[in-house]
Length: 449
Ligand SMILES: C[S@@+](CC[C@H](N)C(=O)[O-])C[C@H]1O[C@@H](n2cnc3c(N)ncnc32)[C@H](O)[C@@H]1O
Image (cartoon, rainbow, N blue to C red; front, side, top):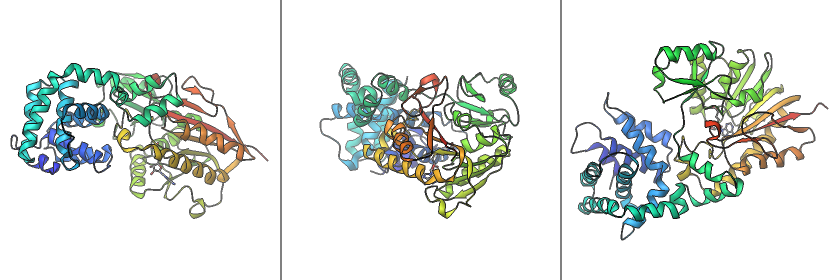
């Protein structure tokens, strides 16, 4: 069964069908291993002009967010497991379950829509199965609720390995982290202080009828009461603001770039922190931004162009400085390392499905290698900030814990702040703390010799 055909040949409506497209997106993530941020925009482009995107987004995000619970429910509801090639039928059932149990869609509407989808291009038995399973689900509601309480992967809607890791790393906080990962993230903005101050921008938002408040920790942060399309933000095209979570906005403060300094942003795309570092230093730093993926480097270029900022952009491997470094040391290095992104699951629920436990060790080795490669580029007396958006100690303090004692000239400087928590090395923000994404920061100083 070709899921894409569901999106193309909806027999009920002439317009592209958001439910069929949502099934398509979930299938792209679960079967093809594509990311939600790649698959969803492609599906959105198939909607007709003027067709609202909200339903498609809600269904794609929601089904992926609760996928581990929906898997447990599906297993309980079907008498025989569906074959891998019938996965789209499973997705349709899970979409129906999500609408029935998480949204206010009336049962009859959810069932009818899903039966129609299955009938559109599935084998004849598919529509009958979808109809039977969804009607039965309502009758077996108490049993489903019991499963959602008693089976961990259903209760927390996370894979078992990640639940176990979080419990091991954060015995007291794991439950709150797992809950926060299921919540909807706020839309946070960073006001470009080269163009205007935060109070002035809050005033502009008020005038535009957009409710917002100042962030608690980020000096340039504004948090919207409800997400809006960026095009409706005052001055977005003119570079007054950028979209960035408050936790990510703390990188520039920890790095503390000073005018006149030479700064390296080693893993730069899409460029949120590159831009913030430049904004904070009033554009007065000489900044080199490295990104291994040339297509992603284009996004840094676009970000800087919108904000009217300048940096040297290089498509290169930060772990191989011999291929790009000119030999002049940097006063500041930001290593926002590639990581599991387990701190931003609430924004990217597909991470729970795409990551494997074995990835963590591989990532930690890569993070360590990047630190080792970049450390010689830092001037004595300079500062390197190591950051990840991971909630796992193996990628965070354990990397720094291994790195610092192995260097004769590396000193970890504790970050004194009223956000996150101090850990053995560095500072960890867990997802949802003060409304922020999960993030880790460590500040390393190079001793003067
Ligand atoms: C966490 S993201 C960086 C986010 C970025 N700092 C921001 O705030 O917008 C990590 C980035 O590092 C890039 N990357 C991964 N390995 C790299 C390497 N060896 N050298 C340079 N960039 C790398 C990835 O492609 C990805 O774009």
